[in-house]
Amino acid sequence: MALAEVDRVSGRTERDSGWWRDAVVYQVYPRSWQDDSGDGVGDLAGIASRLDHLVSLGVDVLWVSPFYPSPMADFGYDVADYRGVDPLFGTLEDFDELLAAAHARGLKFVMDFVPNHSSSEHPWFTESAASRDSAKRDWYLWRDAAPGGGAPNNWKSSAGGSAWAWHEPTGQYYLHQFLAAQPDLNWRNGAVREAMLDAMRFWFERGVDGFRLDVVYHCIVDEQFRDDPENPDFDPDTRPSFDAVVPTFSTDRPEVMPLVIEPMRRLADAYGNRLLIGEIYLSPEKLVRYYGEAPASGVQLPFNFQLIFAEWRAEPLAALIRDYEALIPDGEWPNWVLGNHDQDRIATRVGPERARIAAMLLLTLRGTPTLYQGDELGMTNVEIPTERVRDPWELNMPGLGEGRDPVRTPMRWDASPHAGFCPDTVEPWLPIGADLARLNVAAQSREPDSMLALHRALLALRRERPSLSLGDYRSVAAQGEALCYERVHGAERTFVALNFGDAPCQIELPDGATGTIRLTSRPSVPNRDVEAVITLAAADGIVVALRQA
Ligand code: GLC
Image (cartoon, rainbow, N blue to C red; front, side, top):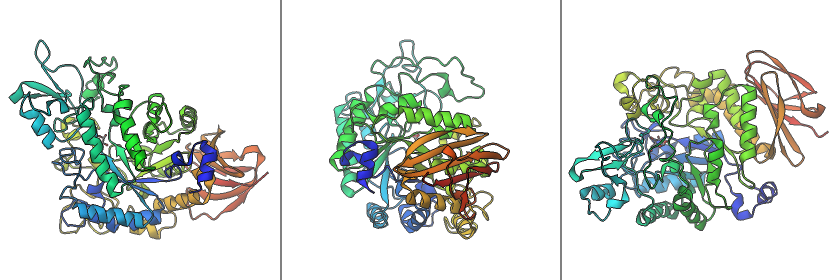
């Protein structure tokens, strides 16, 4: 990347400018990417064997969800050893090979790190639970029952029910903001902080380029364990129990910056320009605080999930982008996420046609985009028969829409019965799902107007035009139901219009400019010069290279 250019945009030093600014992140959920060992579950060797897909797609950063040793109560987000690889996924040698193979292709490698909780089978927790006098008792959050009996306070688990589990042998409750098999670590304890930073050091030493920090805003809870305020709008018939309270005292506490994030950032910087991404589900106003008050004190990319919850209409989208842009602190860099392994697929949320212009939006906004595996094919949520449900969230909160299996089904490489994910002789851990003939990499590689072809074209154009990767964002008034904006970098200007409406609309190029349509939602449409006004079909989009006035 041209560092000098970044500096001009950001006004920051070379050290802070960061390779992630013009990069595109791609998330791999390792259980469901490629099974090399033939047991129906994906693994590290499988990832290594499919790296060329990422290269031909044109992404820059591979983020892999957890592959640590784990009892798999939450499919790896319950870590039993922060310095290893679960045999299901392979060995440390497989990891080293995968990392080297990714680096050899010019891909950066970001690991998941799960700081808020370990597995209840982590030796730290076993020791902590052994007795009230255990040297590691204070590594987790143990409390007596409330005076009248019952849980110490009203905090709720995101995985259903109370956030407190009773531990009979020692007569106390322990805190788990997720599953009972995921006890919360006590980050106020300096020894815990040291041990966790040491674990990060272990992977930095091996060469990883950064971490995605799982639910990092949960890591510190109120020191006085005050009750969370009740949510007056809670409807127990339609909403999961965690919605009964507003998590004021159990999440997003001010001490999370000095006790958790700042030490992590110092460590990352000590290794030189490594990336920290924070998984933080908060309002934009609260989210941007995680950049840190002082330069280089927070995470470089606090995940911005607004597109996951957005209303897909031009005006609200324009407002959301404008407000977020206005909140980004000086010198910091935005980011956008369209999907992940916890959320309904974008093609299910907006339908297959609008998923195309959603991809155009994701890949032409200012900020580092994160793509979730399979979304580049337009994969939709897969229906999971009751007997095949695996996600504990669905099992704990049935029928409330919290289950995540439908978005974690295997990646589809070809149209063979198990999609090339695992041998046809073994059952994949989750079903492959319908529509396989259309939704697979091989078929879409042959089809010039496929969703995959659109992603490849968008990523190539983004690479070709610095205005799309590094340029400023300039809002242009919505025209009809079309969201319009410009990206500007020096003399280069790119105009984007995305028609989220159901009718065609007329689009005027800004300032009466002329230009060349470089891309529509059908990438095989040839480039075409345009004068001031263009008609844009419903659910279509255009990316226009504007000519100098
Ligand atoms: C994050 C992960 C999710 C996991 C939870 C608990 O939200 O993305 O999959 O269940 O944290 O670790």
